[in-house]
Length: 244
Image (cartoon, rainbow, N blue to C red):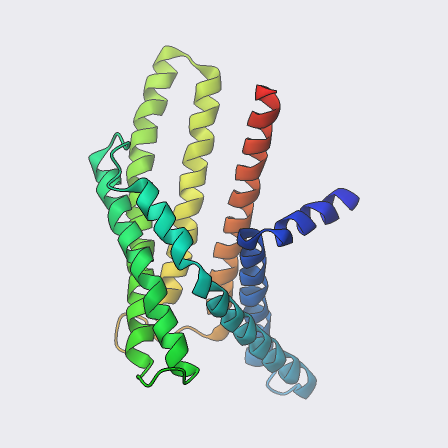
């Protein structure tokens, strides 16, 4: 119990960890609130609770939008360090990653302008800026899926070669990497479903998802993100202990 509490505290003390927890609670609240408002139309107490959870989810979403006002520089530093991906062995992965970084970099100022317009800090209409930020987010997700699919193909080739050569430790490492890429595809696909839902009506299934389905997809993606971050931190911890 104590160890779990300490892990949660460490997670909340980091910006990245706190954002993932807020995201999970946000979509989880939308999932439960959506279910309650959908099924409890005759039960006034459950209906009130459902609406309260949906309002709470909206406030957490707004909180994350405000916190992202300060993400531009960290994204710029990452894009600058990656550059044109000269260190990548595969050309496809290289250019997909570059385009992904461009989409992510452009996403932030578009969202900031939309937020500032809604807050009446600037005199522009926010609709087109929210749309543009959603398009950039969806583009980034789609590129991320393509990148993971390409990585999976390359890992599968390496795995076959490893099986021929008989490297047991390398085999298990490749398996873990493939599982990680599959989880990334599942997470990005869930988010892409929501991104399309928030597009203008008439585009695919835009506007057709009930609140609980948006919450379910977002919760799935968020839990995968938390799992991957925890696994990454454990791997770093193990590698540090091994080097010592």
